[in-house]
Length: 368
Image (cartoon, rainbow, N blue to C red; front, top):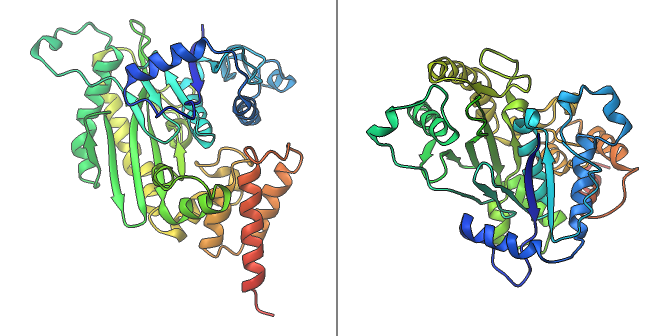
């Protein structure tokens, strides 16, 4: 069984789609176009750096249930202007947020047709409008469907997160808080496996203005300002920020709801983890020194926001702005890890440019 998503680039002469239906129509048109997009090859390389292709010898050391992809080779080669990517459903909650984050680095869009969501390359999400609640909906089957569970989780989280400064956004069932240096957005990611169960995760995207603005000015100086403003600094799916597997959770730390009777227990567990794990981390994120501690522990791979060494721009720039005494060691570690990769600016270029930038600045600022 495979969970297929579609990745594409909005043609240069067209505006980004404004609705889910418009995105679907554009995809239908692009499917008819024969093209090999260079960005797909670069994206595939990034994805397989973290999750190896099932054709790779590296998978021999990984249980098949933990393979990220459902088919291969994953090399980004396509016969159309759309890149179809098959994900192992058992790994969906961990892999999908990672794919979306990596695609956005290239300005690529992701269509998750099964969940009814489009993740645009400029940071926006297009979804089906949430259905209104009605008394008739109380005649539930024992296993909730995806939309029903998302609505319940959204409503149950709303008062709790409001106490912590998050505003509920009904349009896409997300929660946002703004602080002087940036913002955090929490959103529910789910899969409809009815009538078996409904897996879901609470994922987070965050922006620290000073870091992302500086990274953009170094790595993408020609990027339009309106796109820079929408760019996030970090993202983390629940499997990354959750510290351990608890009740009602699968092997990837995502929740698996099998009946309505489990929802109270799931919400209680989730609220506890928000209180003790995620929210303190997001509070720490609000200052540059706190963000540096979150992004650059020793070793840096222990950070819940670490994705790959080729995506080191935010780590390097944060360490520079926070005057981290380990800055040069971090630069050397990231540089050594990407030195063997193709020197394509879209892949490792941002990291290399940021390393060069901070090294040149620290040399000037160092006392003679």
